[in-house]
Image (cartoon, rainbow, N blue to C red; front, side, top):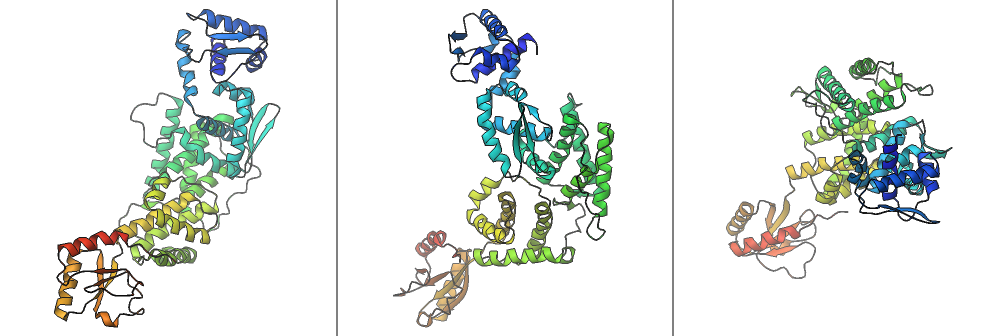
Amino acid sequence: MNKEEKKNTVINFLLNTSGYTKATELADLLSISSKSIYRLINEINNSTTSKKIYSAKGKGFYINPDFNSLEITQDIISKRVKLTMSPIERRNEIIKDLLISSPKPINVNQIVNKFYISESMLSVDEKVIIETIEQFNLKLIRKDRTLVISGDESNIRSALMQSMDTLYLNVEKLSSIPKSMEEKDKNFVYNQISTIEKTLNVNIPYPYNINIFSHLYILILRFRKHGKRDFRNHKNIETDENTMDSRYFRICDIIIKNFETYLSSKLPGIEKDYLYKYLTSYRIEHDEPSNNGKECDFTDDIKNFANNLITPMEKRLNSDFSNAKFRIDLMKHIKPMINRLENNILIKNTLLEQIKFEYSEIYFQTSYISKKLLPTISEDEIGFLTLYFAREIERNPRKIRTLITCTTGIGTSELLRVKIEKNIPEIEVIDVISSDIINSEIINDIDLIISTISIKNFDIRPVVVVSAMFNKNDQAKLKSFIPKLGVNYE
């Protein structure tokens, strides 16, 4: 670290620290003497129009919060970008660095220098990091002034996948010649996804393309961080001919060989195994329009899971999900979803909060049923399942099953029926009966009763009274009442 870099580190450290900082603490941070710290601060103050870093005997140094680093050097501009990070963003970046480096530790000085924070602030971050990675069964270990995340390799990869949104990945191919190693790496990964799609003649839709892109990019990041890894304790996937998809296994072999050529290094077999797991855990659509899928394409386990999900959802949402296309589409999603859960592969649902807001009741019911079937299912996965049911409900909205009771003649009753069905498409008239024969058995599957007379002492179902001619006032009354009709959930 040259003198200018040391000055920048001192400035940023003081800007990020409340109160006083002793010279010995700054000296430890830069691994220099306390006298050298005093000289650096004098040079910083001498290079500005007025004194910016102050000292108090016995307390240490503090900096003017309005300090403008441009008074010293333009070089600090890029470094001060880190000052705009929120504590959450900083902790996510520290977690990402530790995961990429794992199982190799990172020196504490390297972290505090990179993010311009004090060791006391890092200690606070460590507590939050420990809680964050616990969900992946990972541990943060501090030893000999180093930090390392320890745990099973599959859990480390799952945590990395969850943190990849902090890398701002873009799966679109660069239109210009890559100007940096990062751009070159991302372009290479993009080409591998294109190779997978062309070789298998498939389309990998969002968000699965993002996840595969992230997985392959992680491979490069970790290789550049600590080279070829040794996975002697890793058990390779058992290539059972009855369960293994040979097409996917062959494309995995091709992609890993491409990586070995690109990185000029032989990669361990675990990389091909993990790529196979990821490819078989994502929904991939075949390009042939004739391939719509059939029931026989799915195992009994997948069909049973679909049945055990659809049947109670029909009852709880009072909707019809018997459409064959809906069922096939749902099973196409369930199949890779089960693989993801078995292989501990996480997938981020960027629309989750919107789904919870827009389809709150559907999400609640989907969550209730799916957690009964799969207790370990994540909210992200539940969100994806919710979209299938929401789409089917919007495609085929449930009509309000309505009974018309009337004391007038059949001709007038049928006219009322036609007028209601024509003007209020949400209503499905099940039957027209006389008001004197209405009973609990007749209205068992009825949502609403429309009557030409008031029905006394009746509160089993909602009743709307209209005239036999169903005039505009009647229409307005019924239309305003419909939104009040909720679905009864058991």
